[in-house]
Length: 110
Image 1 (spheres, rainbow, N blue to C red):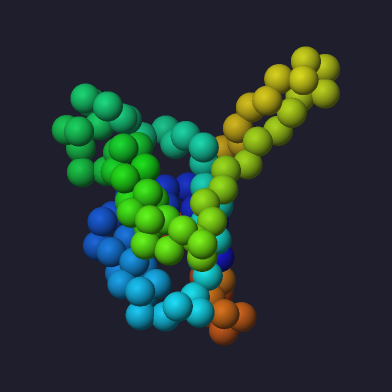
Image 2 (cartoon, rainbow, N blue to C red):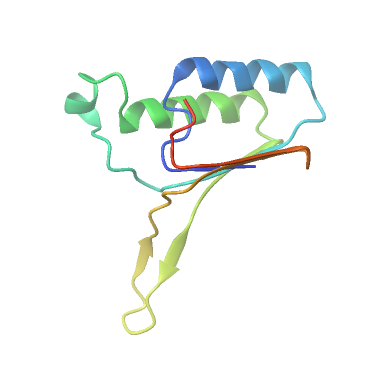
């Protein structure tokens, strides 16, 4: 279980997870993240090492490695007065692995 503001913005970390998914067919991964981060995307994002587009690309890469064992989720809230749906910003950094390891902190995971 990974809950993170900027999950897998780093390709090396995403690649490591993909390799682990290939090596361990019993592994399931749940990723909870922002629907949209505050990082730049598009043309502006392409000028940076870390952008919204890098996160999307890496999340697609991870999901494609094992689509039946990888779930990627964002959290949304429906406002009671207007019924408007808006995404909630995930700022946490949490990782739980096999009930054996837990990491909670304020630093990004890469």
